[in-house]
Length: 253
Length: 225
Image (cartoon, rainbow over all chains, first blue to last red; front, side):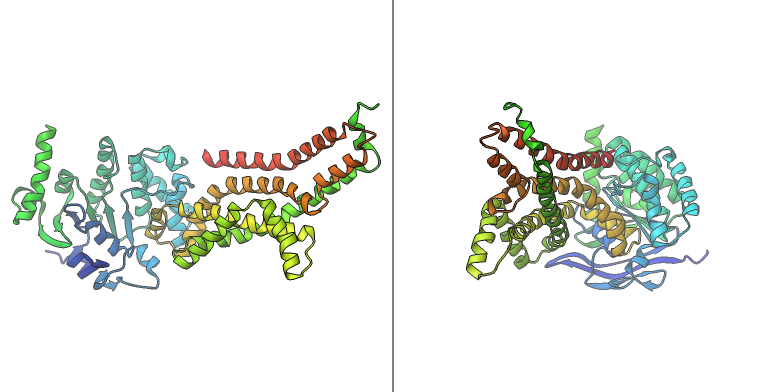
């Protein structure tokens, strides 16, 4: 078997908000092309973990390495690190005063100094792939939530990140729009993107994940392949967590 | 031709004098507005800081200026400060000081409001695509702040222009004061002069303020679509 290249290493990460320990000693390695899905109850620290990776939160101890380079708690040049990490947020957060195309061009042109023509071509290709090329001159407010989220994904992709972080990207969407966003992510996974996904969509998690991490109260409780995790979880806490979803499904049927 | 009061406007240099008064009004407004906008932007940024001492001081300043009628502020500076400290301030200078103090407070609050209305996630999205802090301000925060701010700031400017009519009361011969002088001078010959002169003054204010408020409406529309 070919040696897998590690993209991201998280070692003994600890994060506190004042007295509260949000993350206690979290360690994760992610290989190139791997899709890691993090699940867990609200407030378990999974979103905070993503924010720490991208340097949006300071950490108290531990280290994060991106392709062997230490990126945690850097004062200087964090923006250069963030260029290599794509992040998509729950509330999409397009820039409302710019057209869709300009939203996508801003990062590549201003932070990476890339040529406008070249980036425009790439942006249009990506927009075509997510079915939104006809919206390129529209403004974010003219788009539905699902459309905005697809644009936000394209905006992150256009930076050519080493790894993509998805922070509950469908949580703010109407149910009928969830699918179109998840389909885009599935396609990225097929293309071999490295991704960390935080989600509450369990069926989607099962379909897309190479590996599932279950977190509770700031700790990794269980780490396994999706099949094992969803059919036969090792820990009681994971069983209890998954039960919540089956109960919901039963009621929905 | 006693009933044609408008004729008083064309006697002697009356109309030129009114325009001269209008120029004083516009000049005082313009200087105060420029000072207010510059200082107001700085004040607004200071007001977004979370330091409790700074926020207490700015809050007191803002409330003080808002609670005091502008006329009282004018009297306070023109009659009070000059007497108490034995310094001579011309009416025009007093007016500029008062309108700048008032305008800065109002403008500062508008800037603060516009800045805090930009969601935190706009900054984070900018960071996530690798922009530096300066780039985030330049391309994301300032354009959005200006869009929110400009219509409000323009309204403030028209309010300031209108309120300068109060400075007639501290002896500055601006457009309203010139009007009063003309009316007083022709009280016996043209009794209806007040109607005509104040009517003309109304139109003069309208001519100055209306384009500004049109601009505000237009900008709001452009940025909405």
